[in-house]
Image (cartoon, rainbow, N blue to C red; front, side):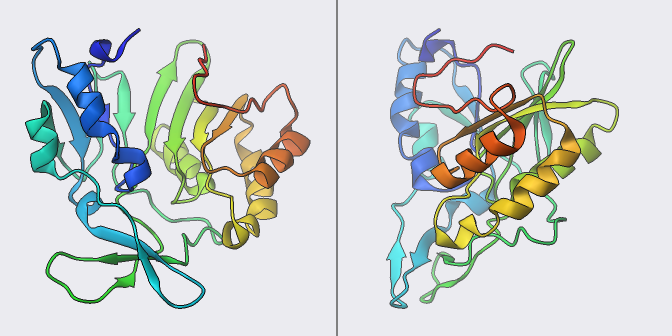
Length: 235
């Protein structure tokens, strides 16, 4: 499979490490003059963002490509905030993820600045984040959580509520439990994940080595498979 085979793009949230290479990817997808590829985003992804350091200073993040830039590189930009079914109704792209768990309160150092505004404001919840889900025949719902700024328990609670008649099979993506502020959530996360009886957990990206260790100790190697760049998984 090559990038030219991609039929649609669903962006998880507006952080440069998830969108920064998207223009190059779109160039590869559309380089032989194929039709524009749908690129699913929502308006909340395109605000300026940063992190408040322990010194109180703000470290701005790199900007993400604008909808206009995406379109110029071959994207058919679909800017919607609600949930959608993609690719012949095979994939579910969530809307805003409800915050239901008591302990997942977002990233406390995260800030944003709206266009034209001079000052930064707190943005711990990152409400533009979305997840993908697909019903794998004979197994159940596989959730692509990507970064889990909403909290992986909130993500799975939302998926279970959205598809009450489909068993949850697994989750793949970053769990965002790295760093001092997030590592304190690891015990509660392990305890609350057990209610879903997942058959597969594939942690990636921002999960962090302490969370990976906790996952392996809680659920075992038969369930937990660490992900890395270039990994290919078959379900």
